[in-house]
Image (cartoon, rainbow, N blue to C red; front, side, top):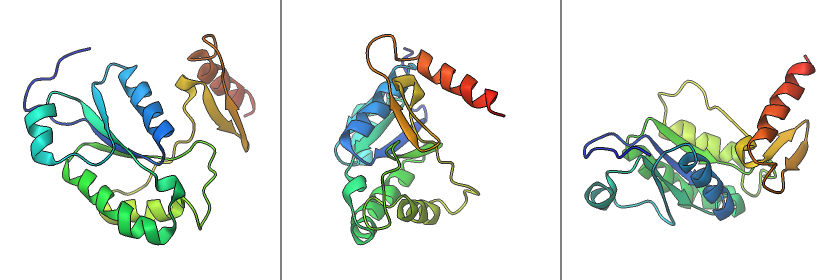
Amino acid sequence: MSQRKEGDDLRICYYGDDFTGSTDVLEALTGRGLRIILFMNVPDPAEWNEKYAGYDGFGVAGVGRTMSPAEMERMLRPVVSALREFGAPVTHYKICSTFDSSPETGSIGKVADIGREAFPEQRCIPVVAGCPVLGRYTVFGNHFAGAGAKSSGSIGIRTCVSIRSLR
């Protein structure tokens, strides 16, 4: 892992829609050499600059997966706006790879609307579900989860090869 110098730009910030998903993103990023901290709330920018500026980024472990659209509007919109203020080139909203949201609970559509309004300069909203590096992915409506030491890492390669062979 390389040590960042004071004044280097933040590379990523993210909000996880539940605690386990937030730690999954943390594991994936740190496993690739980034220095990331996971918070329960958006950190104060002054505190971030004073104490954590040497890190590549941070995540916020949230509960968006359990919120109604009205709760998202009231509680999630300020979080997304606060993340934007950090100016990271990547602001990520982690959704559950099972896509088990609904219009009434954990609505991915409502989050997309909030994100579009918070980042109006973005032309598109990429959606990536699953985390093959952690042994989980969803294909054709089926969710797969690896188990054991041998499942992590190689499962994503097999999945990509299988999808390519269907073309």
